[in-house]
Length: 333
Ligand SMILES: NC(=O)c1ccc[n+]([C@@H]2O[C@H](COP(=O)([O-])OP(=O)(O)OC[C@H]3O[C@@H](n4cnc5c(N)ncnc54)[C@H](O)[C@@H]3O)[C@@H](O)[C@H]2O)c1
Image (cartoon, rainbow, N blue to C red; front, side, top):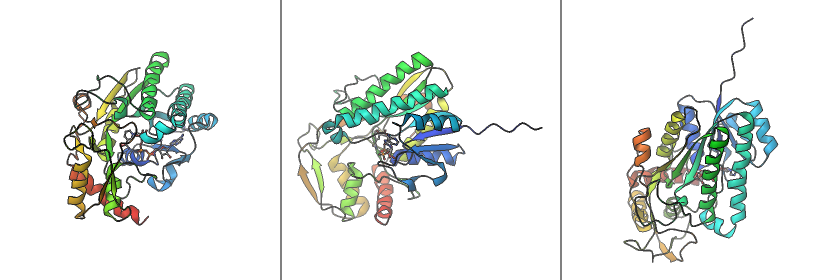
């Protein structure tokens, strides 16, 4: 009697129906990896992934997770699922600690039970808070200025403890500002409410909003508006594949920044959007947003040196072009 072939091990992607997760799911599938997505669709969209890979469920549901791990052979977990709004986290911190920290603990507990020991975590530049020195390196002091950033830092610390306790191998990818969309125009950013600058500016260019509100023009930056480092979502996806492939077993805990190393002010972004769309974009000044540092620019030298990651989309105009193609498609969805 021939032995039945063992089941193909899957990569489990939590939050795969969200903006960044869906691009990583696509990149994994394009190279032939077998993927299972867990998402409760609280902010994600079922259209963002192929129907057959999606299992609808919540990370807080521990028995659901046990069932998932026992019914699938999982070799690694890529964990995107979380709440992501800095401003909201300031007003509703427990919501953030509950989903982002307690939800992750539930997931890690299920992994420990199932003996799955590779974990790739969506961390954030928000773990750094305001820094005196830019570009920011991974060794910089970690002092998040809002509950969202603190929830991510807590998870990074929990991961280190799990590494020591049961051999979990982890990579935390600290994204700066994810932007752009898949060049195919088939998937992209669709948050509701949208709080990210490029889609807000482009929705204004498309006439779906009256004006862009600039949240503070009195920061200590060249034009007084906040400066951020925008990284194309497909460059983020590439980094996930490299980080996943670099996990060889063992209990290492690594963290990598992911940005382009170039800072653009809110006004720079509005100018780029005007160039790309050919439209004049109305602007209004509003108050500072709670928890916003003035400048966040990455040094991504560590991931460049250790994993040979190179961003393919370094031009802000190219990032905006892809986002604009997607924005026009989304308007018709
Ligand atoms: N977008 C950025 O610029 C950015 C920057 C830094 C870090 N990050 C991190 O990257 C990750 C993805 O961000 P995004 O912009 O794609 O967000 P998103 O809101 O588009 O995606 C998050 C996904 O997680 C799902 N989800 C949330 N809680 C869940 C739960 N308890 N159980 C199951 N599914 C759940 C949502 O339905 C959604 O599909 C997040 O962890 C975020 O903190 C994002």
